[in-house]
Image (cartoon, rainbow, N blue to C red):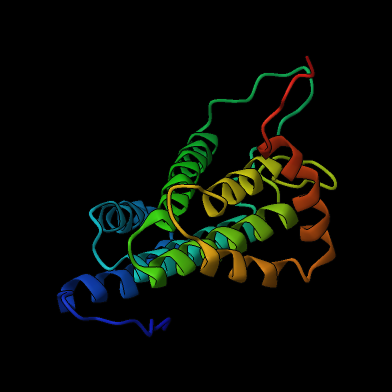
Length: 193
């Protein structure tokens, strides 16, 4: 059983128990999609955000690794409208919406939630690079990496703690390379007069 070690101050036992129990249940059977919806509702409602981030990370990294969201595309043929493909499309949509919300947690007032949001986003980004949503070789989710960089380089608040956390990821050559590749697109373009 997956157990979360989180600060439970101000959270009901039912909220935390729901997140702890529901995430493995989602992975055990496709019939448990309502469990994913419940965790997303908890996350959107701001209930126990660190636990929700960890649960969503576990769910989506497992789904990516198991290729549960990959829809096989045959060139020059339309994608079949099977129940399997519709389920995968629904999962992809939930995944993309949740990733956007995970990035928003980087702007949360709590440093703990900000760092957990960054860690979750980077772990998911890593899994998507290894197990892309589309059948591609050498895929790097640059759009997602750019979104992460935009959040941590925000001029709205002091994110020194997030930048320090991000430097840990820069120890990996691929993250360092692709960070340098994305950075020019984040800088203002000035036209010479």
